[in-house]
Length: 372
Ligand code: EPU
Image (cartoon, rainbow, N blue to C red):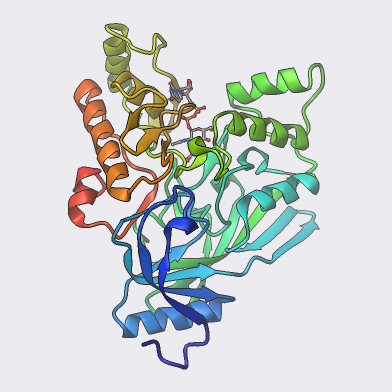
């Protein structure tokens, strides 16, 4: 039983499926709702005493929970205050980790602050955004993060880390690598550009804007609207009533490969292509090339709308594994590993899962290429 002095409300055996956008998985042994960093520190101490693993739950939009659930303590961060200040060095927004990400991007656009206008419609919380360096339509959150306030799980102390400390990269940061499970993010500070130009780097976004506002420069609000409409057309806005929308977003990251591998994929696809389109390629850092995982998946024999029992691929995007209703986590893992295997066999490229996997045994993590 939890000790009485724990100053937060603690629930036992709490279903997690309904707290994730993909809607599968078993319960958490304990769940605590924290209203501030002090609550987090006492939960961490309590969990250490009980030898319990701790997981911090955001919006559950990038999470797959195992059917047997999670035998540790899940922490929910219930603080979401947002403060805005503008000065000569730009505009600063500070937001509590529990704030809803999309609401923050909407607020920035309303205040005419540039920097996160392409990131509207991404489900989840502010505290989760830096972990995988969320990105869409030519923008990444790393571009505007100034600093973060975190709690060190080792000693319960609050620390300040800068964006440079976080070693952000494509869908990654130190929070996923060298700092894995070391810190709890409690607050994020962003530096935005007052009345700045919107970012229009992504072809699909530029085309949508040409249609939406022909002959004039798009505003930040135009860009937000265009991004939301593209996301809606791909079921990438969370809508529990849309079976294509019950996903964890992209299930795999886009593989970043050498030019030689990219050439090989292009040549292989030229012989016996299924989609009839060349592989979409985007320049990445260090002369590397980012390939479209959605395209690789389709070419390997898993078209949009593919169905395997109670699990499917979105009918609008092969990169999203969806739960049309009644799927289990085991079935999702089954489909994901068949896809990985098929892409590996056809192209020699290993897909890496993007969502966080919680409560799975090492065998599953190995099959999905997360553990060596
Ligand atoms: N494509 C296919 N088949 C598909 C889906 C896409 O061939 O089933 C091709 C498209 O034709 C296009 C290219 O892949 O040429 C890129 O597609 P899209 O613009 O949808 O982007 P993505 O690379 O598949 C990434 C992010 C998304 C983000 C979009 C837009 C990753 C893993 N995913 O997807 O982020 O919204 O770009 O910027 O980087 C997420 O991370 O969960 C996520 C949804």
